[in-house]
Amino acid sequence: MNTITVRILVFFLSLFILITVSSQITLQFNDDYVTETAVIYSSAEKVTFQGVYIRNESVIRGNADGVLSYRCADGGKIANGSVVAYVYESENDIFINQRIEKLKEEVELLESAQNPGTTEVTSPAEISPWIDQQYQKIAFLIAENDLETLAEERKKLQTLMGIYQIVINEETDFNDAINDIKSEIDELERRKKEPIDVINADTTGYFISYIDGYESTLSPEKISNLTVDKIKDIIDNSVQKNPGTAIGKMVDGYEWKMVGIVDTEQNPLHSGSSVTVKFASTPDTVTAVIEDVIETDNPEESIIVLNCDELTYNLVQRRVERVEIILNDYEGIKVPRKAIRFNKDNDKGVYILLGQRIAFKKIEPVYECDEYILSKITSDDEYISVYDDIICEGEISADLYVEETTAAEPVSEENPLPEETT
Image (cartoon, rainbow, N blue to C red; front, side, top):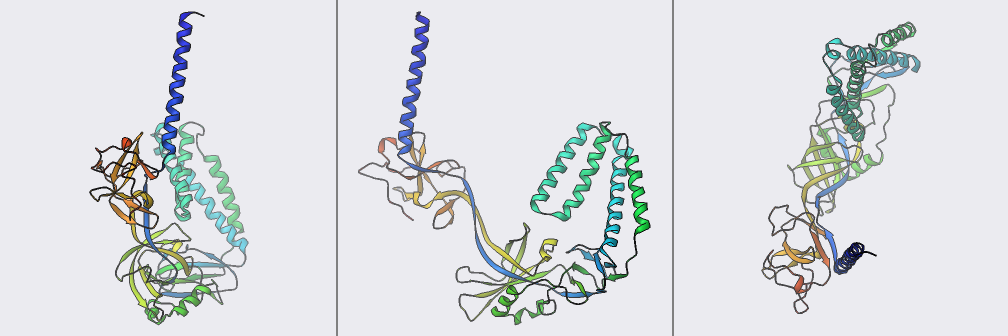
């Protein structure tokens, strides 16, 4: 074996031994401690309860001898005298009319896509980012379950895709497709039937397609008559129904209220406070004002009254809703409570690993609970930072301690790591 080969073998053998020894030392060092990585975390003070919507509502009535075809989506605003619904003899009549409308919409999209004013001045490089952006928007709307906005954004994507096909010369135009669709429309027009009745709105407001029997008893001016027992009864019996000739209802204005029963001993609430409200059945969040907190005979229960002026499709789908009131929302660096210590200057903080050394970092609490605290996010090196390895358990020896971070006193067997202090 020549000298060069021997030297190469010795080099790689020495490197292997060095890596192995270093790894073992590092593992042995780290095994002495239980650590948790500092991360940014958010926490909020919440009050959860079953809420009952209260609005100024009036029932709409019409011909019940037929099949209804609503012309307005729930939560949509309609003017006095506008068409609320058509009444047809059969569901097939409704299907034919809806199919005609859908086909006419397809014609409009195709004609828009082949408009020379757009296709002749647009390049594939320009339109591709628009398609990607529109696709991302649609994916977001699907995740948010925003079906109303999704329908409109789908049309935009379809138009962009049509323009792209012409720009890259995959299609010259859509005239053949347009003519086929128009032929189908003509055939359906010959088969369609007129409605047997038309139901119009007798006031301006927001439409809801169901009633539940509480329209006349649950109004803002009657909130003072509500008791805990009445609220609980509504929560237990809030079944949607359309009795008799009722086909829906109108809400007078976009303002609504909500009542519920809360434990004010555990969660102090104050009239006039602005709060964020989250809903169990929808991703929507709204800002509301605590209008009143009414005491009851039970010191652990109070009736809360919320007031809000935001109205959407999702907020008119039910009478009863499980909600969360967000009183305060905090963000900071999460620190396990069991890791908190005090140094000789009585600074509150934690010990962290710096490679194979240890340092003391101060904390500035912005939120505290039984398991952890949130420390203020700061660029000050004396305070805990994101991704620091916080020591939760383990004995710290003096020769591993780094004093330059703060004036913390080194820890040894004679001066051990202090017990948890809160």
